[in-house]
Image 1 (spheres, rainbow, N blue to C red):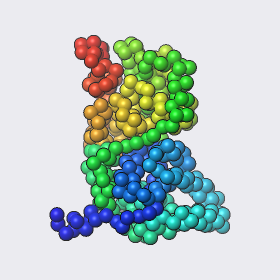
Image 2 (cartoon, helix red, strand yellow):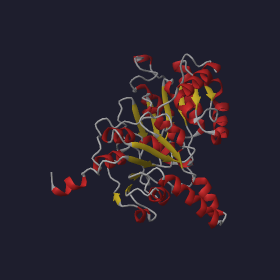
Image 3 (cartoon, rainbow, N blue to C red):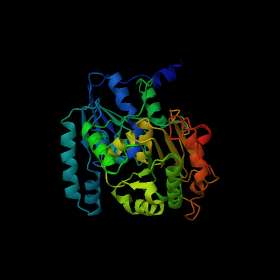
Image 4 (cartoon, helix red, strand yellow):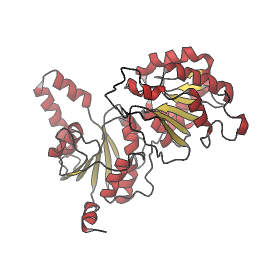
Length: 370
């Protein structure tokens, strides 16, 4: 190994108290979750805490290897900034600084690479503050920046890269979203109330960006085909803000769909996913949970660069690259979203039939029919 590479991979001094920072979003926290186990293996006696926004904090609360989950009031800080109330903003930052410094972290890992995520690392007073990438001037608040790298085709590769650079173990670098008994029981009761004890297929069609959506009419058509060919209804999952879009699909699909969008908590949705025969979704947090919860998963990507290597034989990505791909947040197709339109219902059914453990597994010639 070259001296430069050895230096790059040299581990940091063994810390006693570690703060992991990834404020949002759901999918990104799921991707970054293997770092908890990697840190626990590397620092078995350390206090491990994760800082996240309140909406995402529940994802982490049941993780057995975390000692604490700290909520970061990002919305409140933004409100104080918009209201032009610098005194109130400064007072809140002072309170957060005192609370973080009282925990005496000696290592802070900024997994987001933005100013808003580097700020709490700096406020914590941790003498070692390492950031994965650095945008918006965040490097000024860090003691070290690890450039983003890794194989884009592999799920969570940038977080694996960070672990390798820091000398953390990566031989079992797997995503984890633990669910507690209460959430599992609530999901079981909810499914029973809708007569879903005999199986269902989870659909996760919703994101905050329309260019990542598949066409609503195709979701309805897919649900009808699945119900006819597997005898299992589809369950729509999403947040409270997705209820109108879910209702549109549910009306078009009729009895083939049970609409649970906005009717579960985040961890209850994860517990529902645990019981599904397969999950089909777009590039959204709930969809990635299908892989984390080890369910047969089929993901439909368009405007975002997909991870083709899901790390699991029973998880696959459908993606049709165009010259404009990936456009991410800047579509150039005037709202047609051609990359998602290229994915047909027949292709989804055919891909689902190939998933090990999926609803068509072992069906042979009785698999999906036209």
